[in-house]
Length: 90
Image (cartoon, rainbow, N blue to C red):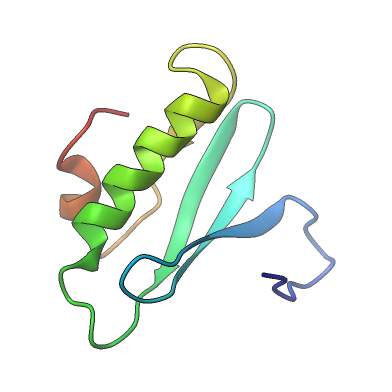
């Protein structure tokens, strides 16, 4: 799904989850780290964060390897730190 982002920072992008409802997470991508910046949750999906973050961690490890490739980071998440910390380790 294309998402328009300003051209001022080409490292910005997004990932999306389509499980029970659409969730888009704005990210900053570099060779060393994929930073999750801002998740955009559907208003009716209060409990989606845990499963979306866990699925994303599992997918990222499968695609990029657990120790090789860029690290997946939720350090810049503000309101979702507790959900990010649950489940599978980074």
